[in-house]
Length: 441
Ligand code: ASP
Image (cartoon, rainbow, N blue to C red; front, side):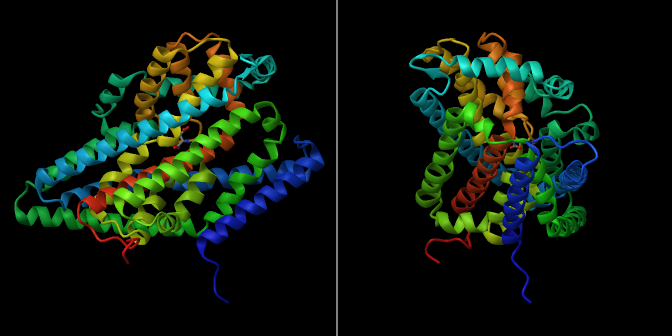
């Protein structure tokens, strides 16, 4: 019998997890009594989900190092590198800006935190209640994360030059340092005598091939991992979340939807000259995985595989744009930060004029660069921006957002990953590469 394609298997796992999650949630009212089979099931599911996430994270550092070095060392000197770097950063800056403006427009238009122009007291009370109910782990999570995240833009720049590259490699939030080190290493390789240069190129190329094979193995079990990750999420996040925060959810999803289904496809069509539908098809494994894991770093191995094997981008362009993109280019996150901050300000009764919103836009753009590609990472940036904008009870609001964050996190992560892949094909096109998803083809 022919095996079902991987994306269908992942989709089936998502559907199955949703169905069983909703079923058991209805049966047990969202709380699994200790000792019951559902409680055991949740434990096993969380354990397998954690294992799967760890397997994905396990390969990130060796994959980034080998792919950046082998990809960039094949560039002819620093000249090509400068051009590629310039284009990549220009694309990332523009696409994030458009994303943030989309979010800002919608949150001002829909005003999810207001009722008849007044702060929504029901949501405010729900915020207070969620904060009062917050488990110590939730609070610890916010506190611990804010220790690790960069505090401002200068902090992000500092992280690019880690005092200890091995320490940076072991810290999830500091991939930027590892990338910069790998870039320097790769450029230095191109300056070596021909013999040594060839040896090192071949070494890192072979290392990269090995990591790609390991990625394939991990992806082969991804449907099980996806089920295990999703089942507890569906079981724990019931429909009442939507009842309280429905308009807020709607605003975020609509803004993300516009960016994903309108803005980026327009860029693909007009600038990259690629058929957007074909590109969605090429990226489906990565999109489904980003959605299920809520981690763009964790999805990176698969994003790289899809962009090269399905979209036809060269290794050189993919290995420069994608690892950087997974760390610094987060369209969905920047958009979300903006909507969340303005929403909280609305609920708290703080009026934000043009000037204040401009500050929020700038802060969202800059902090999204430093946010790590892991679940819920942007909440820390939201906390920083809220504090910076003098919104009262910022911690309370962030803990309340954390309680309902997972589904929005899944959606924005998929947008983050898709944004990176669009950058890769657009830049590949501008470098004169032939793509599989060529419109003319
Ligand atoms: N989970 C997101 C990502 O990995 C980051 C965030 O917005 O929290 O891309």
